[in-house]
Amino acid sequence: QVQLVESGGGSAQAGGSLRLSCAASGYSFSSYHMAWFRQAPGKDREGIAAIHSTGSTVYADYVKGRFTISKDNAKNTLYLQMDSLKLEDTAMYYCAADRDLKRIFGSVGKRFSEVPTFDSWGQGTQVTVSS
Image 1 (tube, rainbow, N blue to C red):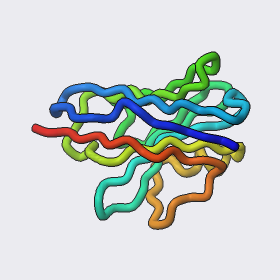
Image 2: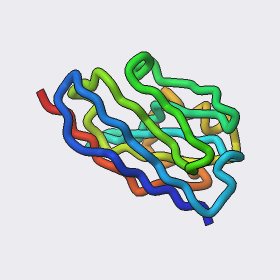
Image 3: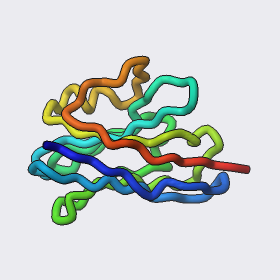
Image 4: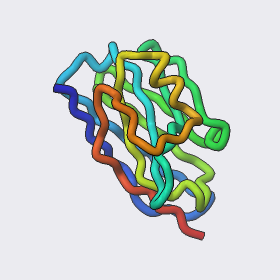
């Protein structure tokens, strides 16, 4: 059973940084494609970044140049480094894993009124940015 657990959320000031982690277990981490999503209260869930099992990445335009997705296969952990944070980055952040590259990469930059049925989702970690 695939399990994902996010951590690293918290509060930061605008212009500051946070790094999120997503610890994976129960499957061959290196063979899955991974992504980060976020959802603000009352809004749809949106795909913000994804990483191929071999390491290539894709970003939504509104985080490109500020956020960096990466992974450490030895530690079975996915990361999201968030720099130059903005007030509008406040949201619950989720990691997801799936074996379908087209589906998970295709979710980046899109908004979903219903949560996509990927192989696994984490429970989320809250990020709050204040002025």
